[in-house]
Length: 202
Image 1 (tube, helix red, strand yellow):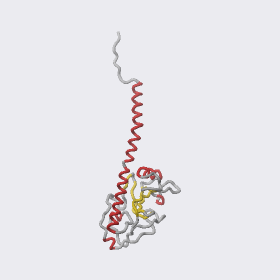
Image 2 (cartoon, rainbow, N blue to C red; image 1 turned 60 degrees about the vertical axis):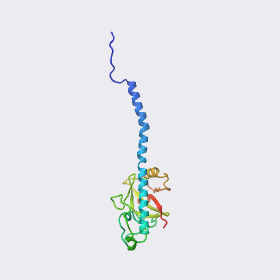
Image 3 (cartoon, rainbow, N blue to C red; image 1 turned 90 degrees about the vertical axis):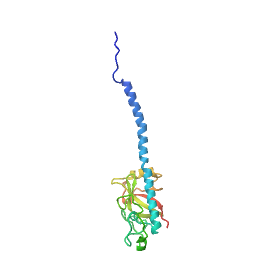
Image 4 (tube, one colour; image 1 turned 60 degrees about the horizontal axis):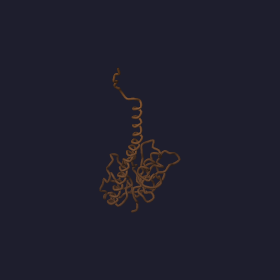
């Protein structure tokens, strides 16, 4: 007499087919999700850049000069101590550019109606996404108002390339995000990432 045996568990072929299906789904879904997560910062970055442009435009409309620092958008500049937009003073160091622009006069400072930018708790620094934030100095470079970006210590040119590819054309010498690589791949003050905000035509 034969007894009807009940099967307990799964057979090896059933387990292998299930594992293969899960592996195929993971191979398709994980890269797509990762790519979408990376794209999520791009609109935030563009919104931050647009916010800086708007703040600078409002500052110029009131003061009738370009600000020399991001800080000028957040707190009222001091006459004779703070300067307007400076030229492209290469090699002057992080956050300091020479030649300095013209010192703000008391009459100019009195026209300040800010703050024009207040998205950050740290004066002179604005987070723009992807872990990047602005340095305090603004400058006039190639006829554009430019702010340099910095990221946590240890950043290198691959971080800059990731940012450039995600929010711009991926070419480091053109577009909104521009950067250059020096003798070493590290992003030093001499070869920081630059965010070209708007024309500096006055």
